Each structure stands twice: as C-alpha cells, then as structure tokens.
Image 1 (cartoon, rainbow, N blue to C red):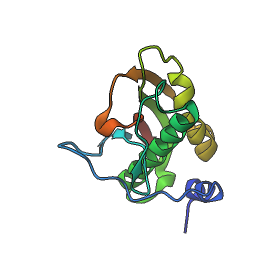
Image 2: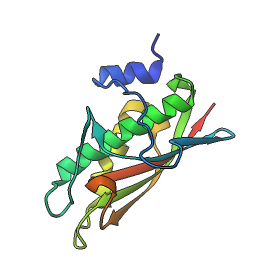
Image 3: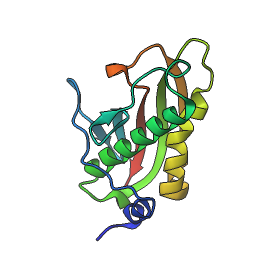
Image 4: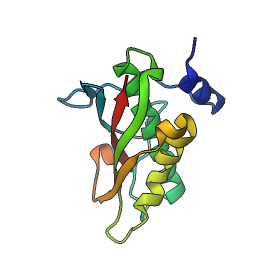
Length: 154
C-alpha cells in the first residue's frame, strides 16, 4: 500500500526507480540521527543521462528536466534509507546543486528550480528547503546537473 508521498508521485505520473548505485568509492547516503545525507545524484532516467553545458548546448528547459531527474533519484535514495517507507520523510532540509555551465551563464537558480518545484509539488510543505545553486565548469560523465541533499526522517 502506497503512502501519501508515493500516492502524490503516482498522481504526477512518477514512479521512483530503484536507488542508483554509487559510481565510485562512496556510499549513496549516510544516516546520522534523524538526518539523511544523500550523495550527489545525477540526472539519469531510464538509463539515459542529460549531458552538456548550460549556456552552450543545453537549454534552461533541458537543465530543469535534468534537475527534476536528480530530484527523483534523491527521493529514491531517501526511500532506500527509510527501508522502503517514504512516509518516514519529515522534510527536505537542504539541497546543493551544481550546474555544468559556461562562465557567462547566470541562470543556475532557474535551472535548479526544476528540482525545487518538483519537491514542493510532490511533498507539499515537507518539500520546501534551503538550497545552493552554483556553476561548475564540468561534472562527472559530462552531466548537466548534479544535486545532493539533506533530509530529516522519523
């Protein structure tokens, strides 16, 4: 039986995938007390990644879609950390987003809204969070966006 968050996700047409495995020597998340620290998630969906550079070959809309894919993967990790019960999530505390962008591109916050808007729509008030949205000259595998997060659970 799906909980309230997964029911809302289903209404949005989203099914959380299995939590992505780490790409190197780290763990996907760490639980410390009632906090879950999720490692950076890439914009992977159905085996495809959004690659490229904002301000060059990736549009703001494509960047927002990449950030949304990161959000879905973040929630997959939180669900795994909560032994499959996403309703243990109390709130999204902080997101740190890295946008692969040219030196003259300044719309990183608009790109990262793809993640923030998704979290707010899917989780309501529990999805509202503090965040950073910074430029990066390159990211792993050439992806357009990478986002990590801090989540409070019960």
